[in-house]
Image (cartoon, rainbow, N blue to C red):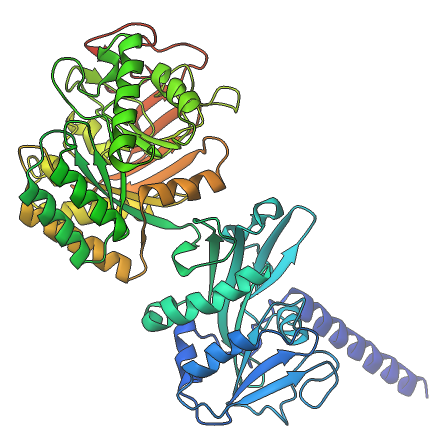
Length: 585
């Protein structure tokens, strides 16, 4: 009897031990992804549009049934138009009380389309709660963001609610296979404008290039460039967005044949051009052509040119009073010729004294190509230490990024030519840049070098990508074949959705809508001249630091509140480089 009791106690203890082991195992063993969810990419959505009749369910939420126009766009993309338009609510014929589409009605192998997010669609909320959707929307009182299926915040999706209004929105496009084996296609923005443009952008931009979309979801941001409070597809950018601008400089006497060749080459490749014309180029035939190009979608802005004497667009050469008189004369002539004041001005160097005057006297000027990234002495000028991406300059010194709103000039400045700062420093030459008029003089394999540097500007920066392709059409050396090949490469990158070709003024509108103050940047890129070299750069309003293969090669500190040397007098030669510390220059 006692043996029987002991046996029963032993067996019970064993059962308890086994249960404890199972519980502990379930706690500490990583849970595998649900086997019923198939990992697919957005390009697999093509199967939805090729599906037979009756296999696609267009899921209207009865709580928000007014998106029929957007659903109609999706239906019209289907190869078979006889699909199911389904108006659903919780716990009805199509959807159970938890928001799960009933598999006995919408069977495995079929497809569902949801236009709208988890607030308006119970099913979208269900898929995000159950981690079947690739990511799920989260928000608090200040921000919105998305999390992935592991619960990690997708950093590029974090957006301040203050940034979302009638001129800005964010949206997501995603495709996945749910636990029941059904394809689920979801598009939605935070607001109705985001949802609207999500479908427009998908149908007109993404789907024609669907094979390139290898991720399961994509985020985009809409910025209302024309300020009409309605989204257009040319106002949509990925995050971080990538831009390429094409600039044509007309700084002295123009050869009409060269001008027309460049314009026709760009137009044949569907590339938009920002034309910078100086008072020395404003001849009747030139002006007529530029006005025609503007009607075709280009933009005309003011170059301060290079003329005789000291009016060669290095403003440090001129005494302050002459600078302002020259600005007024150029602005006045531009307005008389084209009927408006420019929104961007361009010169080799525009000092802070002049930029402050322009900002106050001509408030429509929102941007300036205001400095050369020379890094070494050229043209009696040195600008070592400058930023390489757009910033707000200090009212004390153009090359010093403003530290705060009180210090800044409300003009976004960009560099004259986009230089390869790493190789410029290593080789003490400013000829390493995206401009073939410079680069082909020092680079043997221009094609490989150009493509490498272009991609470094598009993909290497953390905040956004920007490649500036500028050609001086009045310079005495114009390498036609190289320029044509460069433009063809840019065209191909735009077609592949690697970047968006925009006018300078549109880029500046986007930049100003995103950044009220000078942003800090990180830039990592492999040298286009030597694949064994990796450059890392860090730009802040306080300093610029550069590394080559982990070794410090440049450190410059910006000095705030100190006027640049030429602020109230003419200075030549001019060295406005920032204070060097531990620098090889």
